[in-house]
Length: 179
Figure 1: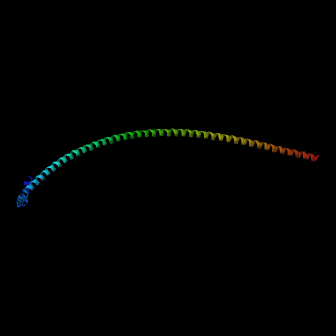
Figure 2: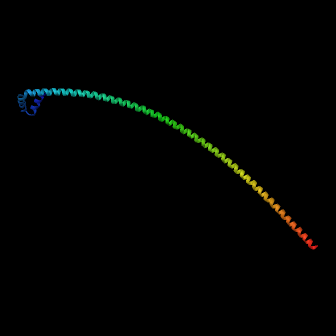
């Protein structure tokens, strides 16, 4: 079959080539036929081997493809599982953070209330102390004024007593001189 193709193609390309084929067949006919038979067998075996390799390769590629797809599916499931796990952990952490924030705000509010209460108590105490100091100062001032007034009166009384004594002594001196 391949020989006929060669002859037909040889006649189309060059019409005198067919004669060369005949000469070649006469000289090397036995050997050429043997070589052609060997080449044909070798070509058939190679085609069979290539077909078998193609089938094996196709089977291996299919197996690898299914293994890769299976691995990808497993990885996808693991990723989804990990993602959902992370999401739930994140939600739990967010909830804990919100609870901690609420507790902190409550504590801060209580501390502010206590500080305001304590500050109000200190202010009231300071106001009371201030008022007491003002009252005591006024009392001490009144006592000092009263004491000063008393001392002033005593001094004036003493002064009047001295003047009276001086007048009396003057009178006694005049009487003594006159006598």
